[in-house]
Length: 280
Image (tube, rainbow, N blue to C red; front, side, top):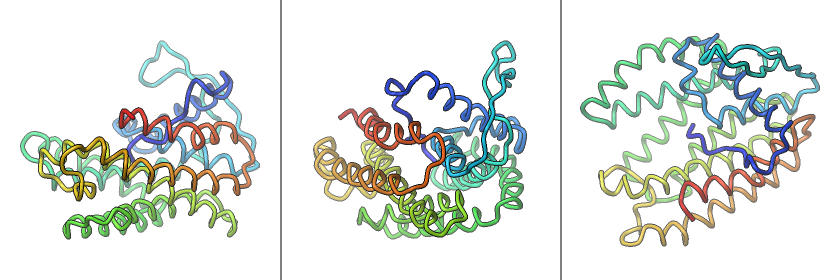
């Protein structure tokens, strides 16, 4: 994913921020332990949110312990005890990264393409390991990638249709956080709205570069001239719609813990992030 699901740090209490950091560091540690040191470099805020959400629906109490950081042995970090809730987000990160690398190999040229080709065998091995643990994630992500590729090949200019594969994929991944049927439906809606938000924000952020490079971007249709005005008039309302719908879904979830941190991300962080990314 793209790192667009972030906290609004100034609005969190110190203890809440420390807990969020503990989950972030725990996910980093679990990635390294399960998939090798390089996998730590793939860590993003999006998967931290997924881990937080996965934890929040469980009654299990999660303790915290202080250990040395793998990147900086002179520094100590807080880590969550137990790694079960981290396994699914870690596997999702590896599978999605592999497909992202494969996509970049197809799109890039020269040294960039060579760099991704060098990385692919390592992350291919990590993907196979993740698929063995969570085969349903492979099914979700591969379908999303294939559908997205077909839309781009057809030069799709329909904003809703282009965003749909990402939205559906995140919706399906979010449902893995619960076994309850009702909660699964709510989680799907939450993931769908946030997936749509991620796709549209990324497209808006890359619009100028994609126009220069001649790369595919669904927002190119009608964006000739002042791209900033087009984004403000056409994309910004869609981002607010995604956030509002995500808020409605979140309020229906049976959150057992970390509700304040999750609420900070959904109610404040999403809006704050897109405004910073798009300079609006």
